[in-house]
Image (tube, rainbow, N blue to C red; front, side):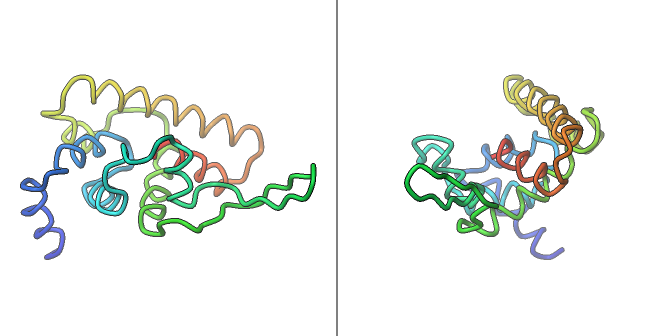
Length: 152
């Protein structure tokens, strides 16, 4: 609780404070999750494309290939452990139907309309994707990893 209070005091003066506030518009992204993600990843614009960000997070499948044979395995888990963990934790929230709950409504206050619209669009899309992948018979951890990739 002391650490949370210290973070709450320090973050408003941080140059990345608007990014932390914008990330909190997403479902499953609390203050601690947003601060952890931003502090571990930094500015996401430093990655040329989303694949580089996924590789940095370790959310890409491993590959064993020889010649023309390509075999894909589980996630490499070679990237940033803390950022990946908070994304996975946040992704579990998308197993529930899309809605704006009271905590999310409070976090959305004061954010630009464009950020709120992106957050709602992401929530509806990710909730639908979770249901689609589960209906296709995928295991829950695999579905959650896919949602975490999309969240990033």
